[in-house]
Length: 258
Image (tube, rainbow, N blue to C red; front, top):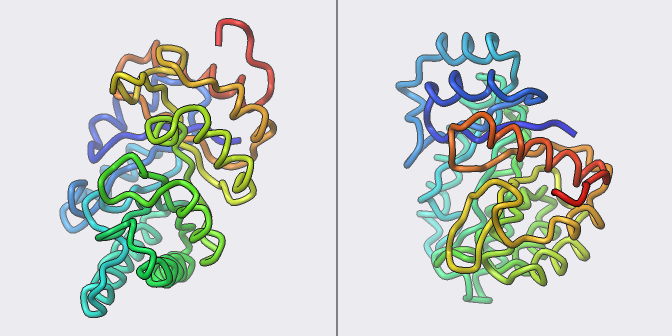
């Protein structure tokens, strides 16, 4: 298992936090619309920051761009855009790229084969650039595919999954976490870990919310993929504690305080 930190679109956050959290080996940088514009990223600074923190790179593809629409020309443009970003990511040495599992109308069953085809094309573009594309569950959002639909489409399109534990809880509580992992744990290559409260607080340190992380332990003990800590704080102590708790749960050694 490799632990990392999400850093948004900020090289400053990468430089300020990654070096302060022990046992972290990668940074996940948001790129494209809503993230860092790849045409303006100071690549020397990025490489220097990764070297100084002894970390590798993962990227998060645009948050605002859906995977599929009912319009073929738009779908072609989406694949072209994501392919351009993946080409940049590959050249920058990124190992994985997270894409939100979204569609213009995620509840339109007639569009699901199109979503699967789009995922397959985008994943193929990533493979061509040397980057593994992983599709993230965002079913708690307006355009996010429901958990089981995302799992079925990921399997159909042979796309790996970024399982966001907090998003699954926000969508359907601990039952949603259990249901997804019991059916699709073999697809999970990348994790986003944080905690959530049912009143709407999200991206909290693990232990500050309501998620039963023992469910994650039950299904992913011994996980050998990548795990990104997605806690919205720059406090090194809180990030270190979440890193410790995540490793304990995934190694199967969580104590009563976790």
